[in-house]
Image (cartoon, rainbow, N blue to C red; front, side, top):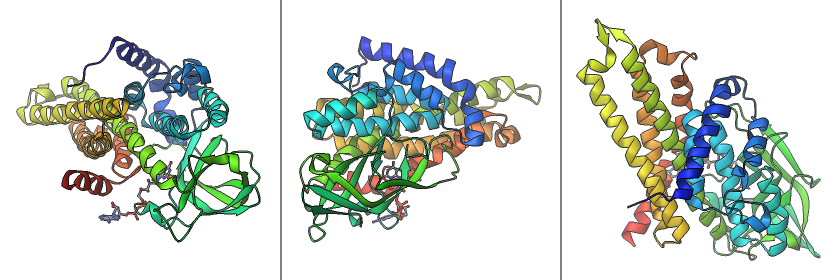
Length: 380
Ligand SMILES: Cc1cc2nc3c(=O)[nH]c(=O)nc-3n(C[C@H](O)[C@H](O)[C@H](O)COP(=O)(O)OP(=O)(O)OC[C@H]3O[C@@H](n4cnc5c(N)ncnc54)[C@H](O)[C@@H]3O)c2cc1C
């Protein structure tokens, strides 16, 4: 059973205070115009939140996956966009910390801790759930590799965001996922890397989601992350952690929506009494609270297993992502229902939460993909 330490409680309180004071007041505004919250990212970096798991020697604060999950949850309660910006950034730093050379860690993790955003570039137009079907190539040329291909839906890769990119490419097309894919670290200022279309989205509108185009993008051998041919394993290991971040985002959205629904049900009077006096709505609240709490606990259990390097960590992360994503959609839907017509208009935050929740069942592996991961582990 998960027990929070004093350090974890402190970081949770600090994140909650920051979210309420700095993020909640601008969440609606940045959603409407899709404005990337650069000031917020800078403030998060000043407080150490952009290098949470990065060891102190590289400029971070040296905490673990549980701290990351707690911070993402607190941010997501008030703004799912800000939460995903951090979640993806944490995932990239975690991969570099796990697989990077000393030089790569010194360079990229110190930049990450300063708030320079990391991007995870796996998905391609023809390779989503079937990520191993990627077509981007990396061809050896002397001491360099030349990358060509297009990545799509890349979080944090906006026209003005994204500092370093972990790019997965085929180094041996014959071997594919069995040793044919390699991970590379590519800098934003590489002339062969450019940002294509930035997507206009249903939710998480203040986070940027863009195409990353690699055109004769030359990198040195020093840009290889991990071993040649280890890329697919690195991507899957990274996603095991990233899924905890998205599950935390989903659990946070559910917590935020539940709080909105409770307030509204206590305040709104119909038939001469608050809505919350109706048993039908009380049962909604009970179901919402139960799923929200179960999601929160599963997220923390998965994060603790990841920190402990438990052999089941990947499966629990997939369960957390599956359950929390479905819970976020269920809870936001009922929270909107409790708001009646007012839930459908933009003046109330539930309208945004309802839209934001939907992506948590899709990215970093759809709910269906999580079921593949879980059943494979359980049947083994
Ligand atoms: C806002 C946003 C941000 C994102 N950020 C990133 C990022 O930072 N980096 C990155 O690399 N990617 C990112 N993605 C990509 C995301 O991870 C993919 O969209 C997701 O994995 C699904 O891939 P797809 O969209 O190609 O859907 P598809 O793979 O085409 O799937 C379509 C549907 O078919 C189902 N399906 C597919 N195969 C099977 C099967 N074998 N059995 C049962 N059902 C199946 C899926 O579950 C889904 O419901 C992002 C996407 C979005 C929308």
